[in-house]
Length: 140
Image 1 (cartoon, rainbow, N blue to C red):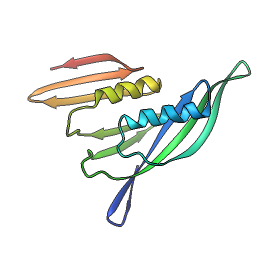
Image 2: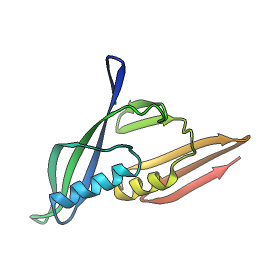
Image 3: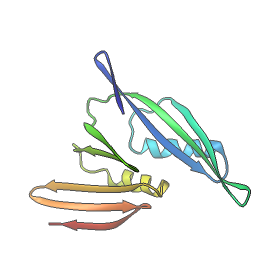
Image 4: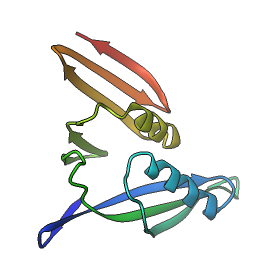
């Protein structure tokens, strides 16, 4: 989500970190994931805490972190699209598709599915990443 204030655009980004051991590790995991794709991380706000419980025992600590960042003029422009159960970002990368960051994020968040489509020098391609792996790809 981007917010305009005067002549500056601020971007708000949320990431959910998880850990089977502690809240602190959940935060560290969220920061590590965010640092792979977001620039100039400085301060995060803990938005929500919850735990996953199985057989009466806590098996996972989860924290939702929110970052407020000044818009980077060199970053790609994007649009955000919402549908039932889906949040989609569409953008045109200036420096290639960041597959390592997408693979890491999909590995850290099993519910995340990354679908990328591209066209370069007359060749079109598509890839789908789930759980940190490419599960489908094609080019034409």
